[in-house]
Amino acid sequence: MSHVMNTYARLPVAFTHGQGVWLWDAQGKRYLDALGGIAVNTLGHAHPKLVQTLAAQAGRLIHTSNIYQITEQENLADKLAAISGMDKVFFCNSGCEANEAAIKIARLYAKGKSIENPAIVVMEKAFHGRTLATLSATGSRKVHAGFEPLVSGFVRVPYDDLEAVRQVAQNNRNVVAVLVEPIQGEGGINIAHLDYLRGLRALCDEYQWLLMLDEIQCGLGRTGKWFFYQHAGFYPDVVTLAKGLAGGVPIGACLARGAAAEAFKPGNHGSTFGGNPLACAAALTTLEAIEQEKLLDNATEIGDFIRAGLSAALAKVKGVIAVRGMGLMIGIELDRPCAELVQRALDAGLLINVTADKIVRLLPPLIINRDEAQQLIDRLSVLIREFLGQTAAAN
Image (cartoon, rainbow, N blue to C red):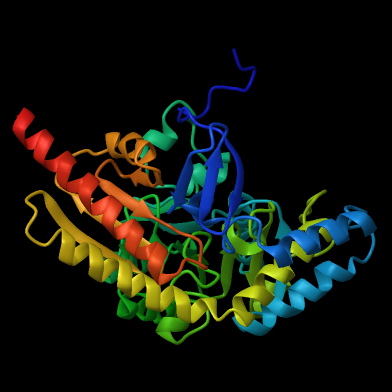
């Protein structure tokens, strides 16, 4: 019996090693990884540049402390500022920590405006993390259950609905920020319209709110640009990152611009491990590899190829509602709960995920090539057709 806390309903497989988009289990069976550690393994598995960087950095320096200057952290902050257009970066270890930093920035910003009970507008079906503040910002009763009382200071509205936010603006003088995922990942690969995001930017400007984007799952090249907001042509005040930033090494980052970038002063916030030399060296190498290997273009090209291939293969299949996504962030919505597809896919040598009960979610490494993408299309379309046929027959 394992002594690991029972927080995940784990699948009955343990992987011993990987190469590119492939993983092997202890029995030597090979799997096509179309989940990428849930959008974490940007460069796939055992990428030679990342392996080399980690080994070399571990041989030099893993950790000192944020009490001292950290050259790798400063270099990574410079790189992130250059690709994002943001001014300052706070480093932590995870996505929920990055969102905690964003929430704290919003509250400090509010105090500077003499707002005593600040509120942040958040969305239905959102997912921002599992700390008490970020689960309170999350729009899922399942995530909230058992952890009440929730942290106050959040106003929830429907996603992709600008009028709902405008109504809040007219009626609530305590609002100081909007926190939104440009693509809701856990919520079902729900993609915000670009005009909605531009409208949020205009509203935030009008009311002097902070626009805070959670790009933890959709950022860092997954949609074909470094950040989703670059598709919409504006800058947020805050953007949070984690998952794919260091190719598998834990790291989070909260990037800020303008007044938001100046909110934190020494003593306001911190992290023991955040921005350590090992994680920052890994992140720098990951960003460099994305550039050198043209993985932004690859995400667009192969993402389009996978969506087109799945759409064609499933076009006349009763029970398939939609194939949607952007770049290599893809969802296939079915008309019925389909969690059992995860085990069926595992048996067929394919790693996928089901989110929001009925959405098959694909988040493959950004290095996936056309041949591997075709294998993904072929295997998954057969599994979905078989599942829908059998569940329809059973009913």
